[in-house]
Length: 399
Image 1: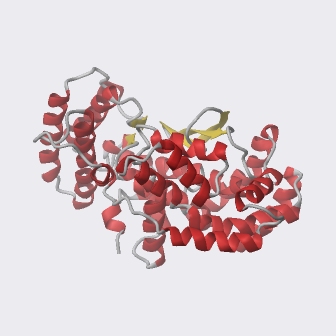
Image 2 (image 1 turned 30 degrees about the horizontal axis):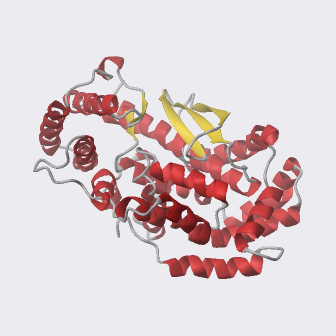
């Protein structure tokens, strides 16, 4: 039972428009748990959908709640952008540039990270990676030594999730009945994915195309589970969709500004409930023993990981090369291997992601979203708990 009178016409129009776009571009809707009768999957002409988007924008402009209006305004703008991308461009026939695509869909700029930052990280890695020879080869050897056997991934993940859930519940109450399942999958462009299912439930998929590292497993479980995507979806379903009656939050869109905040939350999820010292002790202690790995190798990977964090802008730069500058895929693969120290297999996986229609602009939600959330929390503009329960936009997080 909602505690507030919902503007059902606005929410219904929003959900129906989202399904109309998804009919043209499958995957635009990431998850839906609202009224089944709103999930209209009929393929409608793009001009009709654009007219509906313009009408919805007018409805949103009349929304009396300022917070709801801010959220819906940028979301509807993203829907209009997606319709332009699916059609013949802007109303005047002008084609959207890649930069305009990122701005229109996500309300952020596709920032280029200076290569000097990557080179500085390489210098640090030279001093912390064991062995001799090229950095990429040494990094791959170390990754291999801290990889969790595929048959042990779920066993090792279980106590990690138990601890993260307990810490998240101390941060703020979780909805009764929230839960998720985990599946191991292959042949995906991403490493992990949370699928919102509604009713406070979701499914987490872990891609095993590349080795799953013990040092990355707590972050992966925090990112996708507690207090990351699963937690955010469950809490917003409770606080916004059910309690406020804002049923636009019963649908999650993959190409919209909400993803910047969502990925920003997930990128900072682990540090929200556990500090670096605790994590290091846990990984080189109990978790290392549980996984049957060498503590020295795990410690070395942790030391390398701090420098590897400075390479998070490499895939975004690669996306700019591919989509904005029109570079050949071979050049982009070389860039990923040179600056990201990716193996050929890892570079191809990254190229698969940034080349995917649904994710070609999405790549910037990680680096930009992560920095926006980190900065906003550090300067006290918002708490991590508020990020999990309020419909904030990227623009609201900018200092």
